Amino acid sequence: MAYELHDWPGIQGRGEFVRLALEASGAPYVDVARGAETAGQGVPAMLRCLNDSKLPHPPLAPPFLKDGALVVGQTSAILLYLAPTLKLVGRSEQLRVWTHQIQLAIDDAVIEAHDTHHPLGSGLNDEDPLPEALRRTDEFCRIRMPQYLQWFERLIVRNPAGPRQLAGGKLSYADLSLFQLIEGLRYAFPNAARKALAKTPEIVQLHDRVAALPKLAEYLRSERRIPFNEQGIFRCYPERDLA
Ligand SMILES: N[C@@H](CCC(=O)N[C@@H](CS)C(=O)NCC(=O)O)C(=O)O
Image 1 (cartoon, rainbow, N blue to C red):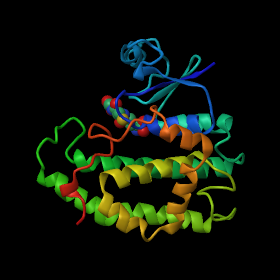
Image 2: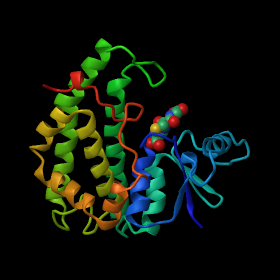
Image 3: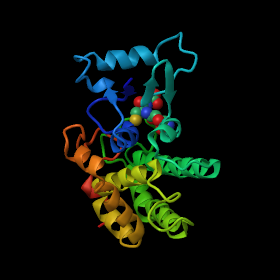
């Protein structure tokens, strides 16, 4: 049975991290809220599930995954759940926990990238170039982004299984997620990302290897890969980027 992925349509969103894992492993899935298979009824179906008072384990927010009767929310937990079946994580407990830890760090970076355009709160509009948004973006670009990227670089260099993946000797969902993080940073903060990535050649090479994976390359060329836009997590405001 196909997995059901529920996330807001029109943006890559956090669901993209799950989509990359499903696409890279060729797993069957329905992108419910995008509606191609649900005749425009996808968002109502997603909201019905979110508001279902009978669900014993209701998700907090999209994205969430349905696998038959099982419903899993939180991007990192979805990947933790899917990875053994999709063969996107090592088999040992140590590697599973380590890969999950890396994914949680990627989630942290995603939250910080999101907070550059919503520095005061997710529900508060950022329609004007708020001084807070400018300060937050500057700090993220100069300090936090390089810190994260250099940490990922160290993981590859120190990987006991060799310097081709973040964790273990085979591709994992953390590699796919790092690819997506780099894509998002390059879109939202091209100058800052170029400067930071100039110091992290190993993760740039990992990004390029992921992009060249045949199933992923096919996905990235397809219409299923929605371009980044200014409703998503990664938003491009050139005037806020580093010079
Ligand atoms: N930590 C959650 C964050 C989920 C999240 O923030 N989802 C956004 C869309 S990307 C949303 O719909 N938020 C609404 C809410 O939190 O009420 C995850 O990683 O999945």
